[in-house]
Length: 341
Image 1 (spheres, rainbow, N blue to C red):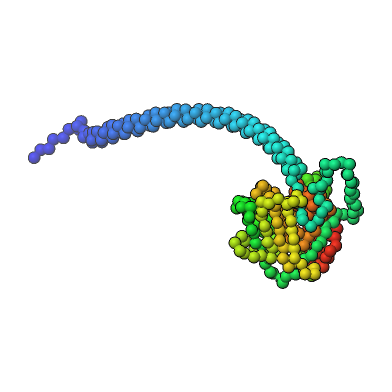
Image 2 (cartoon, rainbow, N blue to C red):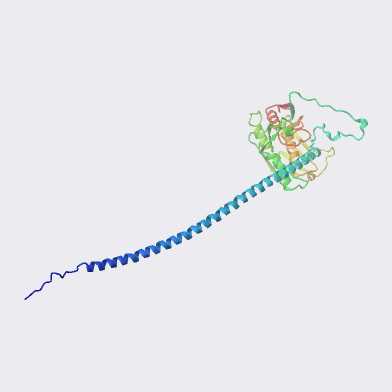
């Protein structure tokens, strides 16, 4: 057997490898094209997002400018509103002051048992005019003491109301506040004439609060501090209040009569005349004054004090009234308490 051989004949073993490489390159080309397309799409979307973002930033900037402008306008409106409110308040306080002066000039409170009242101050026949005089206590103003209750500690004084004048429930509530309220108010001394502007004093709306304050210092006798007010028909009370539409012949607005045994009050009766002609504030002020008598206080020499025969502009229970109540129940009967303020 003959085997022929050709030295010039060579076997090309690289041909299959080249073919495979070409395929790989073509595949990579396809992949790179897809990647390039994806990147181009992403870049296009980013560009669009950038444009949207820039537009939003422009819009927000415009809104911010508009908000700043609105803020300036609102600030000016608020300033104008505050100026208008200040003007309205000034007008309001001026009106209130005028009304208060008119009320204080036209409204007086009278009591039954003291005749040094100004009801006969102006006589029709001036030929019989008589002068009067006032002695001023250089030590301070005074409040007369009268007589006191002598009840056991903690006892409630019962107050019975007879509403003959048929006043409204709001009027009754105002009257009850003068008796049972424990509220304290602070009033500038310049308004009451008891001191310079900037100083103030504490006053009490009702006698329960005043009596509790008076009891903060020990006393020989118990100061009544609790009151039960009722208006049941046929009811009885330690203190009886008559609200009548009758007119007192001597011109008094209030009248207090107490039944006593020695220096002890057994029962008090308060009569408020022309109750149907009063408003709630007037009834409350008169009741506050008369109830002071029912507890045993007399009259004050200070025109600014609640217990003065003519009610003051601020008819609340003063520190002087509180001190007087304390002195009365500590045995200072039928005398005077000197007020230091």
